[in-house]
Image (tube, rainbow, N blue to C red; front, side, top):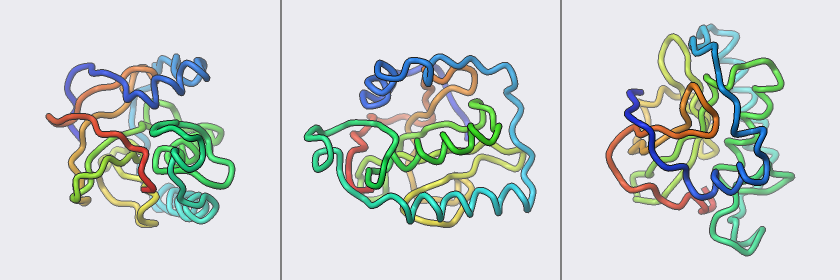
Length: 171
């Protein structure tokens, strides 16, 4: 995944950072990607299945009465909540923030969506609540817009041209 320059944070991430500033002020020194292995792939698959089953899809509007609210899910949430949950678990397991990047994109139907990008030496892979499969980013049908910076968890960089969508759907 080739990134460009700095861009604006999605509004939901900005508000998440206001509530949890420690989550968004991490400056990574180790920006080497993870080494992909059968063990890592299996670990990512287990985590994806676990979170995708544990969290029930519900919109931010249903849960919080607003269009966009990024948070750690308890038992329900939308796409960015799944991504945050997966990211938090991998962080507690020692994976660097530079390799766990929240990413916003457009689905083929034009809806906004968020996933967790995991950087590896074999390419960036996507942890998605819409599938249990771990796919390389370029094997998906998504139009990637922006993601967190590898060097600072509160900054975002462009991926491709496009307008950032709201990602508060059921997906």
